[in-house]
Length: 175
Image: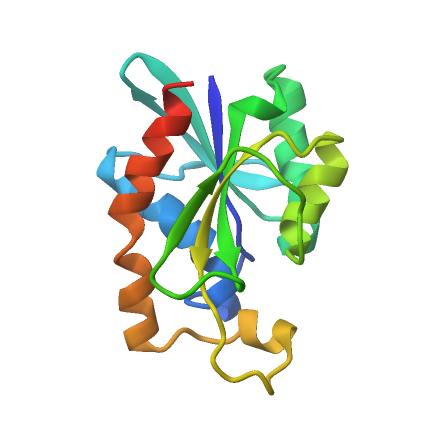
């Protein structure tokens, strides 16, 4: 079993914000595979998919970004997974818009959701799919930027990388 996590914040106020790119990608991935997020617990909404005989658990934490590690750790512990069985899809302000990067491990960097996952798993050895959301206006506070609504042009650039991200996700699934 593999765990695919999309990071974001729950609720209508956060829909279509930069910090919810992980949720958007996971919704896209689930739709492509005929899945609906029809299960929930106090920490997340989730669903399962079976691809090439492999069971995938797709989760969207309901814990808000800064506590995403609680939901991830719950599923890792419940299913007795290793951190290497986890991939996290999230925004990355240090990457240009319209790019996606796959990394096998690394620190949480400036991303509070990733930092919390590292803390809760006690490991940096989980995979990442990072979607570039670079900010052009350097005067805006980082928190305000990641929680701001995505303009239409930027949304097209970012969601235009989702198929490429699925190809990169397949590298993770083959491990």
